[in-house]
Length: 397
Image 1 (cartoon, rainbow, N blue to C red):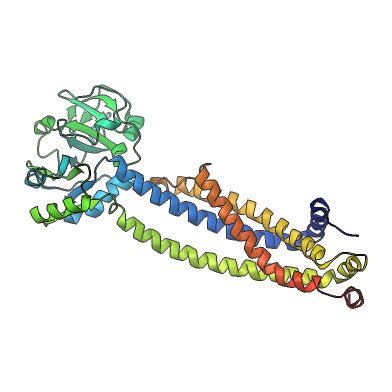
Image 2: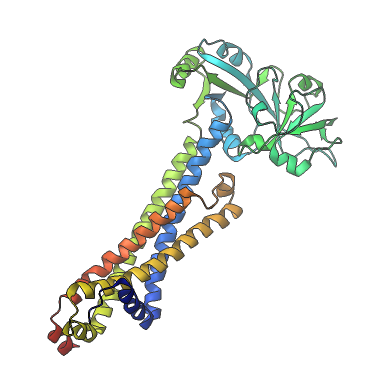
């Protein structure tokens, strides 16, 4: 008997897998857990990195300036849509916007909303902006006029879902008309209620909380084509060294550092899982080799070569690890999908599992690692079994 073709080898291997199904299921589970951890870790890292990068790009600015003590708060608003308010003097904008390498500059003022009855807008960050200098909000406008009139506001996509376009909304006790909303940006703008700079003077200081005239919250800067942001940052620091300056690459630095710590924990866990899967594969196939010596001896006696024996048992290991790998990929995608719904960090960073080329590649890589570890663990006992002399194998069985 010479099991030469792939179909015959797979058929024999499948019979071997089903012969001790429970024991093999334990090995499948070990591989599945390893692959699930790998898939989850890579998806998590990919989702966070992509979300930070895309969020900074969607603001349309190369440089963001905030009060130095408010850098963390600004990142929380940009990346996690948390309502924040912080202020610096407007002369900071006046001085910096005159720098020669700056193409455009605009600023926003963040105000806290106050609940005032049935139709108050209390689910968003009130953002006061200068329509003449704006380049952050206008590109995202989905519906409504290009310019606001007195008493009119835009709302972000999240606020629009919560409130809708209604005429009876109130803001700081004043009636306002929602005339348009922005597309989803996956930044703090989704939670924004956008009002004209000219309407700010109509609100009483008591209603605006800690805001005082002559203050602004955040500055957005576009640099001229061909100019490095780092050069403009150096110029800004010469003009005003006390402000907090963030480039696109700086936004999310704290989140990235936290991510590195999380990935270290994942790495240790994955390493331990890999060792356990390796040892389990080795012990499983060591027991299998001892149990099936007689069978191997008979196969060798009727003409099977060492390579045939190795192919049969490696096919068993491949079937076991392959099924475990598929289960692990499904588990990893499912885990991040459901955690994205229930955990704040994952939900706000957009870490969801979707079917695309990148995520499929991650699944295949994780499955390949799981299969490789299982095959390595099984290789030594399989090689030892294949090298046994036929008569000795039958005699010792």
